[in-house]
Length: 255
Image 1 (cartoon, rainbow, N blue to C red):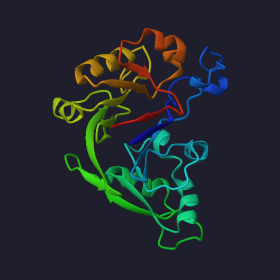
Image 2: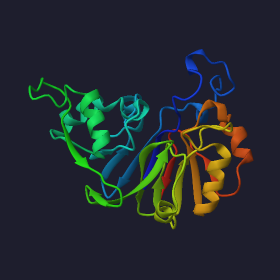
Image 3: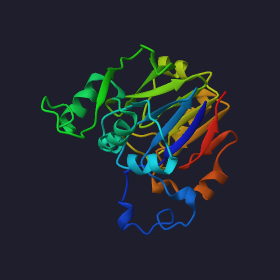
Image 4: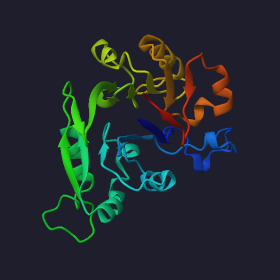
């Protein structure tokens, strides 16, 4: 299984367009972070987790020619705003794109992209096939087995996903013991680490390191990184053994 980090950043914090901090002005490609998303490729199938505002560019940058499905973690704009751009895959593949989300997220998509779900279909609009995800119910996407991981984004339930020995968690603040056990045994775990300062709905740097230690994966990668966390080079020097700062374009092989 191949994992590609399409985006490792976040909309949190000062807008980068008006920011002159060390990260936003960095020339290091590792500090150029689009909104968080990941591509999972297995046995010729391609799944993307979340389709935020940068989705179109991420697909072009990854040179992705075929998309089988999108899995949504939750309905916040930085995770769903690029859904309209699946229409290019509809055209190329001449088929609907499978979308997996719980009913709350599906209802948010129906409201946000009402024209997609209208009875009067405008020519060229995105074509989707919605599939419901429920907590504690593993599911199969294009022949790939997926285990949903329930986490809390302050008071908002969010799904992470485990595929084989890979687990992907973003926008978590807390994870209960039952779901920690679902993650345990993964060789590679991805968790969010927004910043070093406290935050009401995201794991901080120290909280993410503590959770990584509790889970005990061989490798842990930090994502959903605010520019407030610091540059890739500086943060990487501080990290314990086996924990790494993810970056856009990073590719991993998971066995």
